[in-house]
Image (cartoon, rainbow, N blue to C red; front, side, top):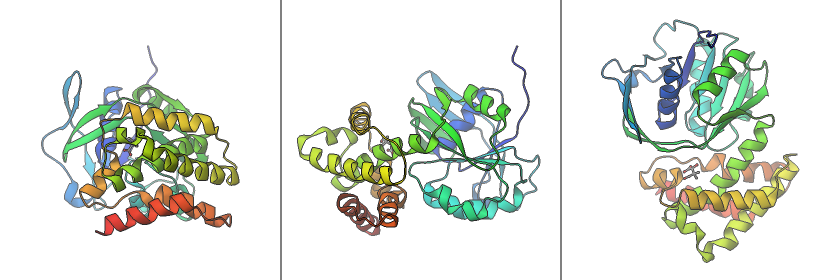
Length: 304
Ligand code: PAF
């Protein structure tokens, strides 16, 4: 029988991925709770998850800043969009005990640098997931894709072994990545190609397999490889290109998250995807023509 140590896990960000993780943690025997804005506090009906095998309903507590946080949090999983992370963590920081470990899980890169000044004694892990879910209502989601989840240490004290074991047990196809930044850069390559191009061209992911996009795709990836190299991140260019092709074909019918953000006039994650590449390139004294172009076009689209 498994030895079971109860750990308090909170999720900051009750979006589709946050709710999916909550259901998966609960199914593995460790019910998390959500940290939300006061207007999102939810005391009524259960949260529901639709999968291919049926619908499950579960109850999760929700706390907002005005509430007394009992019990203390051992692990805070942040599943907000990248552009929300710094602000939200700054607000919640005073409520976290110094040994609360933080795990950031979102598309794009850059929040680990932004939150460095407020990290204090907290240990920080970063993660990436290719699981997919769609929000059907505020407390109701549908799992739209299976996938892998990787997480790994970035700064400060490491995540307690019990917490690692718990995540590995709860999250399907999950693993601890020794080089988490490399894993994040692999995902960044996928997002740097698919997200802006599908948003700008107003197409589903699969349409990017057409010949007319291949030059831009390869130019965006060449620039990404150049910046990765300057950042000391080792990527295999053939592997990265192949993986991008694979994801385009595996998610052919989907509309990317950035396509949806633009369509529904929500802020996009562009500053943490192509914007991050442009910014890091700038820090190394180079400019990126293709990534800058995508960044500018998506920013223009979101303004409209
Ligand atoms: O952001 C997204 O939409 C997804 O990360 C991906 C993999 C590009 C599929 O649509």
